Image 1 (spheres, rainbow, N blue to C red):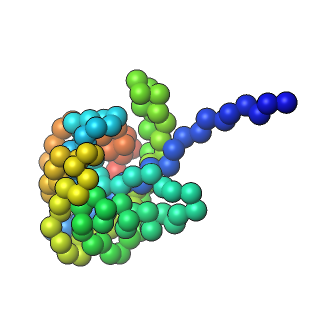
Image 2: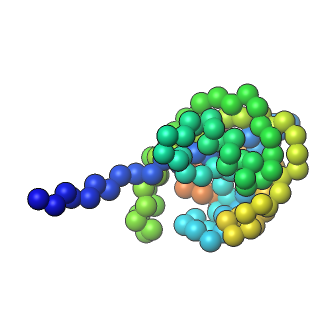
Length: 137
């Protein structure tokens, strides 16, 4: 008997890096949510610790070093038009050093620091959902 394929949500990690009361956002390119602003992050790999994923993704995407990682909220993100479903786990982190660089130009066009009260638009769906939940720094 053939086994039916089970479709499940992906686990995304979004890293909210804080520096001088500002957070880092990048402008998405080449994937769902293109043109939207997002936190650094990516997909959790099989058997990878959440904090390890957060550090890896931040370093791969921006070249920044972070510290004081702590669990944040989560969102349930339904990208209906794209047929994608993510559960995004947010990790809060403090900036340590480095200048944010676009190290994956096929995924991101720029990195910039913003105050939470003055975020750019459009925002990537997980950030919109985070705001809808009432999250604030």
